[in-house]
Image 1 (tube, rainbow, N blue to C red):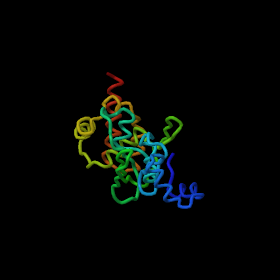
Image 2: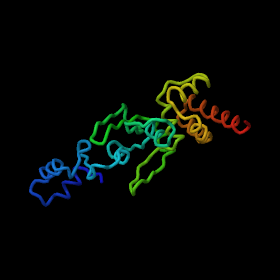
Image 3: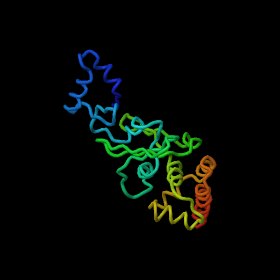
Image 4: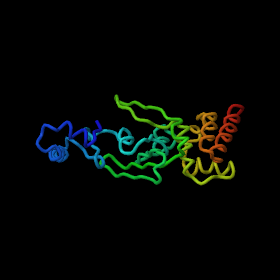
Length: 200
């Protein structure tokens, strides 16, 4: 369970020196210090459950989310999350791994987020469509459909079947929030690929 330093000091208020007691608990492995002022009581906690507590409001997106959905072939060691109005990329090195946080447009931030539950614990994660839009938002715009497919399948190494399975209408709706020509082009490209697959 994630706990802040303030929560722990209140829980340990019966001790003469709560801060010193916290240090001893960390030394003994009862608590794991995640970042300044943030602790975890279970050293085996998977990192996706910690991201939103490290920097929020945020949700898991970009490469980590795409890997979570099986859209890219390799594991992603860094937990990547989306934020808004932070102004710069934030990076945290912790005992649970590396976490990064990138801004997305404020108007797009609340769309396309779901709650995933694993082993009784929950975390917020982008849908496959939203994670892909977030990913493309970070990339320079592309001018042609060929450039877009090179970006998707060569640069980002996305699984073509997984890309074809996502919802083109959801991508089109998200494109209006990002005001991105690349994401609009993606929506049209998906519709073309899906129409071709349906008639093949």
